[in-house]
Amino acid sequence: MYVNSGDVRQQTIWPTAAQIKQRSADKFSSLDLTPDADLAYVIRRAEERIGKPIRIEPVGNEKWETLTALLVETDESANILIRHDDSEIYQNHCILHELAHVIYNHPGCRTAKATAPAMAHSDFSDKVRGRILALESGELTEIEGASAIIEGEAESLAYLLARRLLRPRHQADERIFG
Image 1 (cartoon, rainbow, N blue to C red):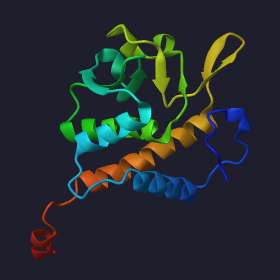
Image 2 (image 1 turned 60 degrees about the vertical axis):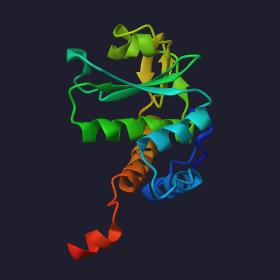
Image 3 (image 1 turned 180 degrees about the horizontal axis):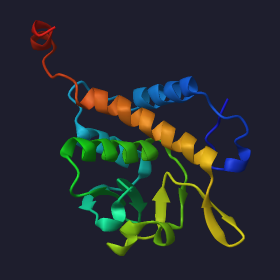
Image 4 (image 1 turned 135 degrees about the horizontal axis):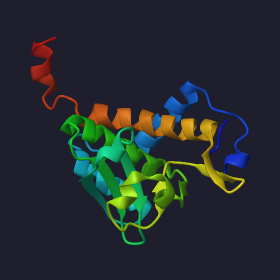
């Protein structure tokens, strides 16, 4: 079984999709979401885990072609940067994905200024959550397998959170429409 220790060298067995789905279900259950939970409630739960406030900041420019969101931590706060011109529902998905990195306590890397176009936007510190990079001959390279697992975990949990937050508010009324 895969153990997310934050050290890729210790991860010797890659999880199956079913294992990722089950771990995400376990993480989701651990949040103890109330029936009326909304995005603000999920953010508060994530803030409890990270021990600092989480801010959402719409940013972005032409360099954000493939980057849809980024979680950047400072000593004082965690900042989720999202593209300002995406639809609200897509922004919410990106926020949930970044919150999932917090909930999973995914390892970060201290290379954001070198790798993320968002860093030109502000003076945030340099810890990015959910990406793993390694030094090889002085070059930064992403570790594909581990990154895919971490992103898969975040995506799986984000999906579960979205299903809860976007559910019908009045189940009896929904039954009328089938």
